[in-house]
Amino acid sequence: MAVEPKATTEEVKMDLFEDDDEFEEFEINEDWVEKEEVKEVGQQWEDDWDDDDVNDDFSRQLRKELESSTDNK
Amino acid sequence: MAYVSMGEAHRRITEFLNRFCDAVSLQDSSTLCRLLSFSSNSASHLSLADALNVFQDASSLIRQSDKFSEYGEILTHLFRSLQSYRVGNLVEAYLAFEKFANAFVQEFRNWESAWALEALYVVCYEVRILAEKADKELTSNGKSPEKLKAAGSLLMKVFGVLAGKGPKRVGALYVTCQLFKTYFKLGTVNLCRSVIRSIETARIFDFEEFPKRDKVTYMYYTGRLEVFNENFPAADTKLSYALQYCNPKKQRNIRMILKYLIPVKLSIGIIPKDELLQKYNLHEYINIVQALRKGDLRLLRHALQEHEDRFLRSGVYLVLEKLELQVYQRLMKKIYIIQKLSDPARAHQLKLEVIAKALRWLEIDMDLDEVECIMTILIYKNLVKGYLAHKSKVVVLSKQDPFPKLNGKPVGS
Image (cartoon, rainbow over all chains, first blue to last red; front, side, top):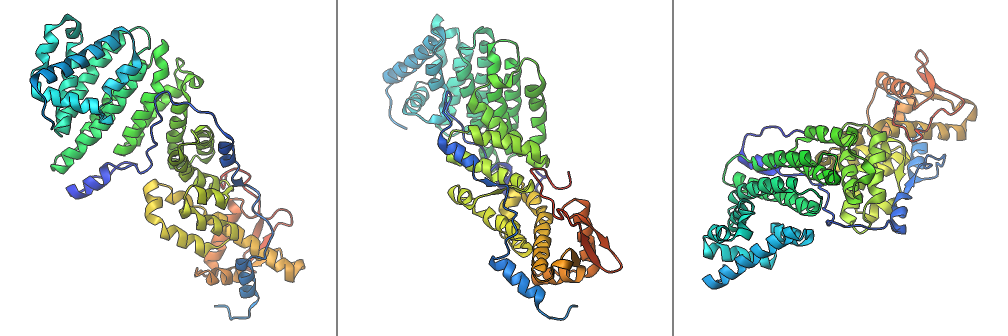
């Protein structure tokens, strides 16, 4: 992500010093044990969410729209 | 600044000099770390700085003693840096600290064992932090910032010192991570390439030997780079590693990992549960996930627009925008299922007209040619299995598995 040269000092001030997501330093010698909590974080993903359920609001409204008899363009 | 008598100033300076030299001769790394952590702004640093500013000629104290003058260059620059730091001359503080760091690294090279590695880490950290402060001072005075870039060069030099066969080599990953932070801040992430190449291909390095905290940080940054390069399987591996091994108490770091991991997971067809998004305050992804679940293109567009700035800043905007194809797939599947409910025999035929109607309902205006184009892309990318009957303006879906799941692979791979 190269920084483009900016015209004014103001913009330089704004853009040149940012990485919003700088990782926080661990303490020197900081060590830890992965607890149950961490394993939990890893299990908060779904890969089988793509079901055939059309009973939600969105699907019902979509069905109504498709079955309605408005003129097509 | 507090009032300090000459006598008291002399006492404080001598005390520091003794502590420093004793730490070195006793190979007491943790004391040395404490002595060098300027940015901690500890009371002892502040009181030492006040003493230096009163005494004014600490170099004479150093010269007068054999014990102290052995590390004369190191100590003189260190003191000058602390003095400048205390009175808010951050550019001067950085310049002196840079000299100190160079002198310290020279000494470090001569120490055979790796006893002072942690002190070296502190020096690297302080170099970077001071450089950032110096650059802020420069820009606020209308000058061009250049100290962080200089710090980067210094850190590369330190990396070179550690990249050898001996026990000091386990320090290389820490320095690498300081370099990453430097380059990311400067926006010169292309410079990460050469250190990464060294870490990953040089035979002297065994990745498993490095401390866990450095491995986690390393995987976070290299994972982010993989996201920028849209290598999603690699990004998934690295960011997931960082997530798995990160200290669970570091909630902000976990949140940052997730911020980049979530778009990656979405791109390979895996979605985060809402509890995860809530727990780590990642609300910007809630509607994106919802749009994908439902096939709601309008919601996707709204969500991208609503958080456009945030996504652009973190560099994930394009990744999220590309989810559109997956949302199209989901929408087509919904239309197919709905058609099955009323007319199962002909459900596998999707009229372009019907698709256009659904899109119009979602505030997307397309003529039939454009719809045909989208469907062609979906088929080409294997998101839809079937073919286009152009004359009859129908998509004929395969009877088997017409909407293949991504199964952990990115679209079109």
